[in-house]
Length: 387
Ligand SMILES: C[S@@+](CC[C@H](N)C(=O)[O-])C[C@H]1O[C@@H](n2cnc3c(N)ncnc32)[C@H](O)[C@@H]1O
Ligand code: SF4
Image (cartoon, rainbow, N blue to C red):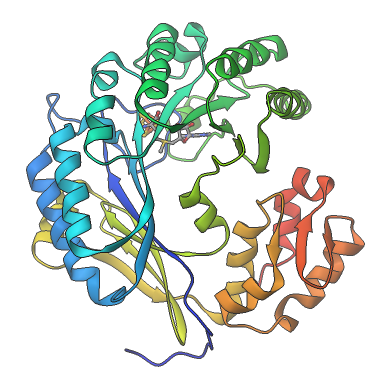
């Protein structure tokens, strides 16, 4: 172990992220590490072998620690067979100590082919499904290049509700040509399906995507703000709390895995392009796995899955912490800042004072939380903590 300059009194909770990088078709807005399957096939067994080798090589970094949640994300993980997912879960269970109520989420697309597998995913040990619907409007789904339609989405969510005690529904808003009435119709349909958890993302035009090259006409900022107000109202009236900028949950249904990211917990990420953040008594480390699936598989099977491995600099830790913690409606405990960065509170005192002066946060002796205004101008608030 290299020496470091931090003093972490204890290590935070640990999660596992597993990336499965294939999709039927690449969506024009998506900048995730996802790749179209070639000739409708994906190398399931070889990829699972690579994940197992990757995990084994990483074990010394997390020796003796319990794992509180697993998130199998993508890409479209539901393209893997239930047998493949079962093997993945048992490979993980054989090598890591999971807490008894470990949350195990799988991302699924709402096609018919995937829906037929939901029960088998539950039997394979998945406890929570996250279904990427995006919209219930067929014209919008076509504009987004999605391969499913609204009818399939409704059927998939009904199946998710029948097979799982808890699930998430992903929507996007500020879609090409979307009106406030169309957004209301999408949210009304989503709420009618009574999801325990909703994630609602503002569609962003990401660099290096098809939409960046050929931009669609999207709603202006003031309309997008009005949409956000409306959907916060509608979800609130349905008994869902907006506990994070993009996340809404019924009581008892927050996503433990994402909550751990937002509270600057630790995560080991395995799979193509996966990111890890791991704490040690004197340093915090970030790792990135090789991004291209074939290079990743070859690398992992030869004991070389990692593309980048570096300590997070002391000067960057306050911003990294705030980038996550200020996304939460309830903010963070000051003690967690010191425990998880190993830095004294004096490292953020000046920025906290400035944020308070601008009405962007509220604080007492124990906690800091964003005000309504801080939530609306989150990137300005986060920027105050830049090194
Ligand atoms: C990693 S994707 C995977 C989920 C699944 N493959 C799907 O597309 O349904 C997770 C979620 O990120 C959101 N997302 C992806 N690209 C986005 C973008 N450019 N702007 C906003 N949200 C986006 C979508 O809501 C999507 O469901
Ligand atoms: S299906 Fe999901 S992960 Fe795949 S390209 Fe579309 S948005 Fe990205």
